[in-house]
Image (cartoon, rainbow, N blue to C red; front, side):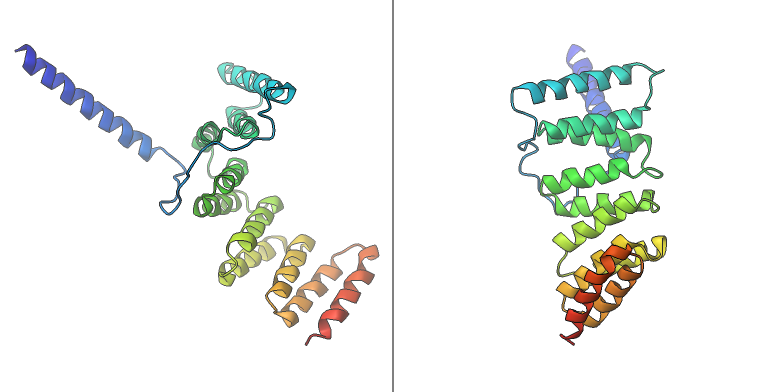
Length: 232
């Protein structure tokens, strides 16, 4: 009888454990791409020096964690979790940073892009390029009005997706439609088109960039455009 009870208990624990892992999987907002392999979650942080820098970070971690324990505190938990993730990144603790960003995303993954952007930064730092691409894109999806998230995505794609021009062009097109004739977008696009040898298109982008640039920059842009025209 005792053995039977033990078996039933083990089965119940296994079922409970299975339910827990199923629940966890269902409630994980961000999952690492199956094509990525993170060889190590640890990296050399800028502040893990066993000195004053590290002490300041650990003090800030304590302060942020105290905020999580106080329901009346400001800022809200989303920002506290993002802040904690940033501090752990300074220490080179990628795994704990990842867990805190997950907690932030569980609070808000659809209207705020900050945790997504920082997840992209973390995944890129860990070499999980496919996961980073997804996170940077999600930041744009969550807050398409934020120029910085478009800039981060475009910079990432230019760096890592050099063979996938259509994806880069699509990122530029989305930014252009969101910001109309935004100077940053057209400068980045002009530089990229030029690097691809698409000189005529690059000139067009430089001209739009010129039209939206301060007066003291126009002469140098004109000179660059004239140099490009000689390559046609």
